[in-house]
Image (tube, rainbow, N blue to C red; front, top):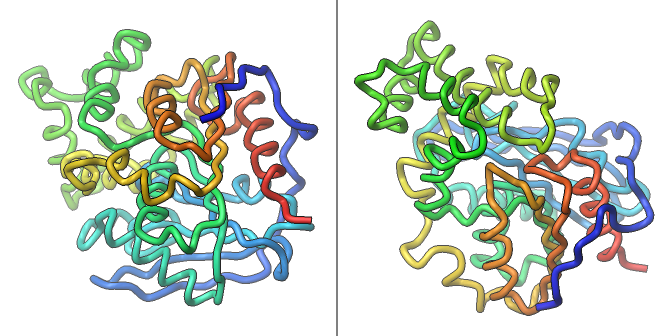
Length: 325
């Protein structure tokens, strides 16, 4: 493993590319009534890259296309089961990590792509690792951010540990629940999030999502928090996230670190905010230590969000590293 690179900014580009309009989109029919939204943008004859959104359940957005130079990349984005524009919103039936891995592989075949770079942060880094370990021959490289390995300790940090740094946000998160139910935060939220009545699941989804948004940047970012609070985005994120947390992210007992031998030679750029309170840096260091072909960059003045200046620049530089001449 190359030593961590500590820099305020990396690479030659600091800002995202201008708005990019998709040149193709559609829905892929999957099991249990899921209809998966996908789109392509950039250069149809360029290098293929797959964007993997976070959550699980957050969905992909227009801003995510802008990490990719449209002259070089054929970028594919999709909304995972139950998320974003995929249907049904918040659907939990046959919604597991294994189903998502096979959805990705089905999409690759559908689009006729031989190999692609995986770009993802937070849960997107988890899914990228899981897919790469299942189909290493289909992955050319990885650019990952805000590493989340899906371990019980990481879920416990999100539900309980964050209060050490964000006691106010955590108090709002737990304060949404009756005091008698606060001993089982995840269970109490799941009961409300899975209730069919919007008057029950709506407020619970907003409380969960606002909590996550409030802890996602180094400095307060009210506009970002407001996007987390939007009803449709909040429901997909909160309901699916709680579902996955309750099932240990549907990962094997040995976890993702147990499968690193399968991808040890796939080159990777790992970008981690030093003050990431959603996915603390320990996981990024542990991953890099077991990945000889990876390079870890720690951003000294960033939290969890991909859009913070230092993290944004390092991600752009990471993609630039893998451009083919």
